[in-house]
Image (tube, rainbow over all chains, first blue to last red; front, top):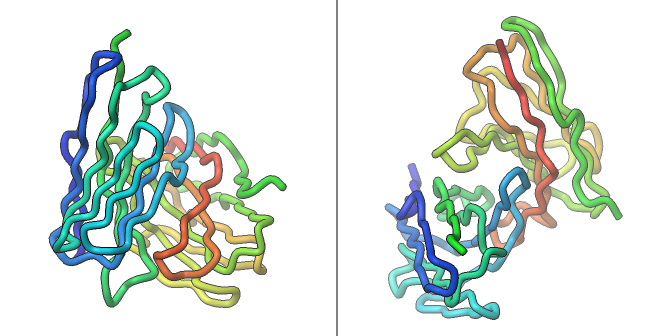
Length: 112
Length: 114
């Protein structure tokens, strides 16, 4: 079945530094979504990518969808303490385009 | 507009006990989902309901049953709780079953089975 894998599992970042988290699928995805979960909270939708090679930006966050639609990345610049949390990617693939498969997440901590 | 609500927030059960987790959404969404979250494993789909009157198994349905009571409510039942079902349970909803719609999550139920 479809599997979505994320690396790294943990990311410890100095405040002000940049980092990237990666998402890889064993199958071609129809789309990919990214969610953020703050400690003790629930996942909150960040963005969706649909097109091959698509790049979207939200302030300091840059999301990319690979050309083959099998991988995605989230790059955060100038990390702030508000970026603490776990970032999940989740994708759908035919024939189950109605079911999101979530990666295990990247948990980000920030050193002030 | 409360979004997705879940009750209870916390629950402790003994092995073999049963309970029902309640979920309701006020966004007029067609699709609803139940996930469990365990450390290091992300969110795993237990059951989903693409539309009112339909339910389907997800990735980890064993030991659970669901009921889509109406368009707003989707409940998850544990008939005979086991320690392996200790987890955080999230309910979610989306406008349509297609994965192109974002999912809105409830606050979660933290369940411990002893």
